[in-house]
Image 1 (cartoon, rainbow, N blue to C red):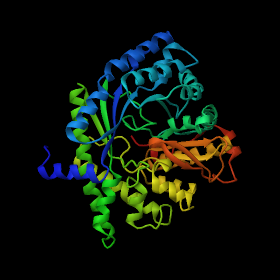
Image 2 (image 1 turned 90 degrees about the vertical axis):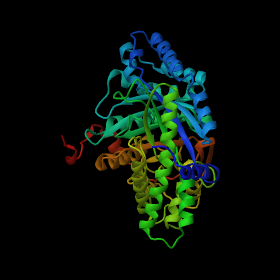
Image 3 (image 1 turned 30 degrees about the horizontal axis):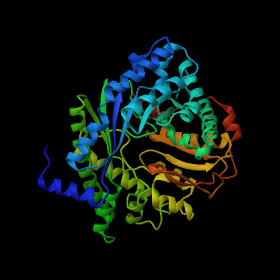
Image 4 (image 1 turned 120 degrees about the vertical axis):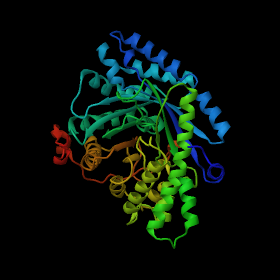
Length: 454
């Protein structure tokens, strides 16, 4: 369906006045044919295939942005989970593959490359085991590589052995990147019910059911939604608020699909999905928390915040579904604490606690994202935080994630600056009680009874 003149004018306004942008154009590349008994050959194939398919990604994205007048902020790559292509080699150290991915990302000029990934929600293969052991060094030695692991699903339950092990991986990664405030952990995330077409890092990777190459687009529009609600005013009832968000999400999704289809055509690949998640930035006016406060809570984290997030997420999804048959990814509303200026302030003044944030993740589009905790947080506490979030996803059949950063040398209330899109974090207090016995028990938390559907 072509754009009308009115839609074009609305898009111009959203870009110029309301910080609308395409947050990410992500090229997915299958690497299954790069598997080789020789690890060095695997690395060479990985580098060559990524560079071959992605060599024009940045230039084409920049061309489209200039022609349409729509900023495309990030250009990224997602690849097949590395544990799958590393299995043939039997190698124990998979850092060389991470280096090859990083070199390829540098060569083609993308921001990040995701896919240093393993699915271990039911158990470990030898390659999964090797990938876990390689994560801390891989993230410390590379600049653009992102890592993700699947620890739980609604059909399999929660692999608590993997959760406990992942907690140790987080602490080791933080220690190896201590000079940068534990920055390696900002490139590391775990999932329940991961999606295989996610264009956003750190969880971006390309599932085995996807095409050889595919373009997935992540749009953003907190500023556009905020402006629409400001024009609506505080007198409107909540049905009118939801309808306004839905109509706005429709417009934003149309822009994302236009960019995605054009990028796919020029790159001679297939268009996958448009992820309509409201993804904030530290820039003033580009905040999901601002939207929640316009809906009616005094400060994000106050009573009513969970209900406001639920309504916002649902309205965004409904608007996107009206605009496109290719809505996918995570789609909804992100609440990454360090990347949202109003949310940062809410943590600073004590309005938003870690417990309230967890409650809000039950209804947002992902989970605990970019949460800073003290560097001396025990692994058992991290295990409990992760297990709680995995349980929310497992029981509710939704994707949940944890991207948590233990900041070496920092305590509750301290501030850590990462800069750029990663923003500023206030170190949050996870509390003085933990779950050491749960951490040590291991095993699996079984899937809920309503998972048995066929």
